[in-house]
Image (cartoon, rainbow, N blue to C red; front, side, top):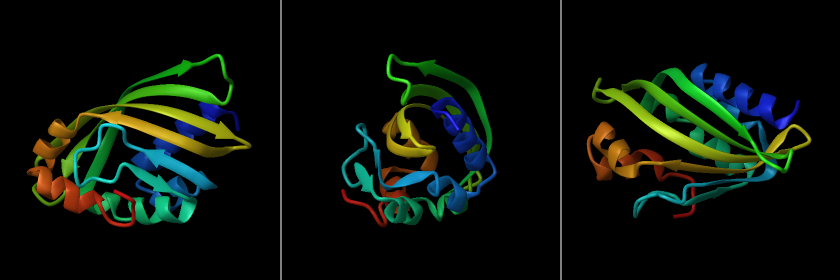
Length: 145
């Protein structure tokens, strides 16, 4: 599976709420980074096991129902792609709508994600989740802050 196909597969698993399979796409020592993370939110999650722990409760927080406006940008490095997308759904705790745009820089090799750097608007995410404390509490478990 090339990097383009791996990213598309990852987004489909996210939409299917199959977080175990989604986390299973990471390399043993793969990393997720959130450069725009607000204080109190994890900035880096290292290793497949930590990625799994970080993501396991995601469907209990956000009911993602659509991943739209997918645009995949290839780079000069065949192992690196940039993907833009919008996730839309419902915040499970409040029933409020959730709609947020993301940009991710994904590095993959041998069919595994080695590095995933995700850019998103923490103010919009906090607003959707009911506040920054709620956002941080929802996503701070199992990761380095």
